[in-house]
Image (cartoon, rainbow, N blue to C red; front, side, top):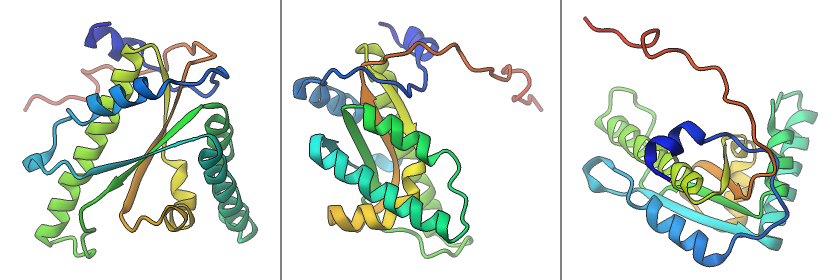
Length: 190
């Protein structure tokens, strides 16, 4: 599939077939992901691939985190739906920023470096999603994983900043395209 077709065909998949993804396929996808552009070629992304019992354990941790937050009156939006999608997907890949987090000073040059790293990791996630589409796989870019960031990262023994996750597998649905604003509506030509 060419890149233009992958861009048009890509959908957020929330229902996956109970069909495993071969390790060779995952490795090929990871290889393609690392071809993403990155600011200053720093390649700040780190990926953790979870399948089987490890993926199930992550879901338990996230569900417990969500339960605690909800008991405190904190709304967790669509997180339970994301957990259901993660449960169906045979693979979950978590993305981390391996470089230090900026100290919070918005005027600091560190903030710009951090922003470039986050954009680079977003580019890697997009590269993964488009490559997966081209390989006949379905994906769901998940940010609801942040509701369990501390507990998940502690369990994994990772001190880096979590940036997002991708559920991966063979799609068991074909969602219609979601409405998009036209390029004219979101573009200015001063």
